[in-house]
Length: 515
Image (cartoon, rainbow, N blue to C red):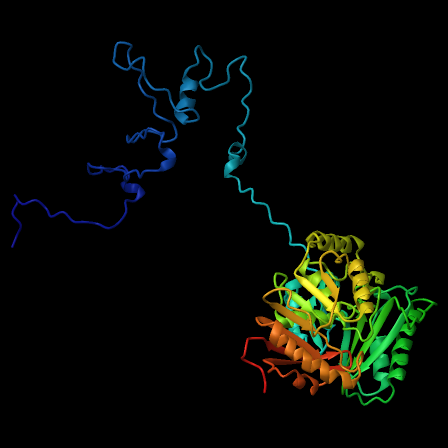
C-alpha cells in the first residue's frame, strides 16, 4: 500500500539536542528563552525580554514632555538605588563621560560598613565576667553541753550556717573561715569552734606523730606564736594521753625546723595557737582551736558565785523552754544571775562574743577588715536598752549584789528587775510566764535542807504560779520527787561533769498535784 500524494509526512520528535551544525537552521516560532525568574536583587532593574537586551545595564525611562500630566511631578528615585545612580550619570552635559566625576567634585567617600552605620544591629553582648571564686570550704566542729546538740544545730542555722549537722557532743558544718568567725561571735550554746585539719586511722603513738608531721603547720601560724596540744580521748587503747600530746607537739616543732632554724614555744596556759587532738577507738582528728578561752566566757562575769551555772547551758535552758523576749521570765534562785544575763542578751539581740578576743586572730588567715565588718554588723543589729519583763531574786544578799555587778558590766542593769527575796514566799510578777531556775543541790545547801526546800517550792508553784510553766534543773533524780508535781517532760543535760535533768511543769489549777 502506497501513501497518497496529498497526505503530509508525519512529524517525528527527537530528544537529541541541536548540534553546532544545526545552529543556523530555522527554529520554530515561539518562546526562545526560558522564563526569567524573579530575583529580589534585581527589583530596581528594568528587565528587557528582547534577545539583544543586556541584563547588566538598567533600562532608561523615556522623559515625559512638560505638557503631559506628571511631567514635572515625577518621583525622584530612592537614594542609594541604581536608578538614582543612573540619573546622576545622565545628568552630565557636553562631551564629559557619562557617570564620570565632575570637575570640582569631591572624591567619593566610601560608605561605612553596615555594622558601623546601624550599631543597634551589632551584637554587643560582651562575655560575662567570671564569677568570683568561692572561698575555700573546710570542716568545723562545735562542741556543746551534752543534750543540746539539736538546739546547737538549729542555732547554727539561725546564724547563717546551712550545713550544720548535730552529732554526739556537738555539731559539725562545712564552710569558710568567715563562717567560723561568725559562729564564734554569735553562738550562745557552743563551747568552742574547731578547724579540722586531718583525720584518719591510728594504732600507735608513732602513727599520730607521722600524721601531725604531714601537716604544713607554718602555713597556718608563724613560729613566734605559742602552742599547746590538748588530747581528748574516748575508748582509746593508748595508755598515756600526756605522751600522745608530747608526740604531736614534737611533730609540730620538727615541721617548723624543716623550713627554718627556730621552733614555736609552748604555753600551756594561754597559747596563741592551741591544737586539739581527738581520739576514739581507732580514729584520730587533728584540729586548730579557733576560739581559745571557751565561748561561755562572755566577758561580763565580774563577780563569780559559788556553783555557777554555765552560760551556754543557761542559754540552752532558755531555748528548751521555748521562752521568747515578750514572755515574762522569773528566776527565783538566781545566784550570780547567769540565766537573767543570757535572757537579757537574747532579748536585745546582742552578740555574746563582742567583748572578747579569739585565737583565730593569731593565725595567718586572719583578715582584720572582714572581722571588723562582722563586729560592726553585730553592733548594728543590737537593740537599744529598755525595760524587759525579766525578774530575779535570791535569799542571799551577796548573790543579789553579785548579780547587780554582772548586769552592770553587761549593760543590762536598767533592763532587768532584781530583788532580795525568798523563793518560797515571792508572788508571781505577772499572771503568766516562764519560771526557769537552777535550785541548789548539795552545793550551796546541805542535804538536810534540800528536802524542805523542794517541798515548799512545790507548794509555792501550785499556789502562786497558776498559768505559768516552770523548768527546774537538778542533778539528783530523787529530790524533784519531793516537789509533789507531775513533770510533763524530762530532758537529760550535763552541767560540766554533773549529769542533770531539766524538769518541765505546766502549772494548771488542780490538775497535776500528786497525792
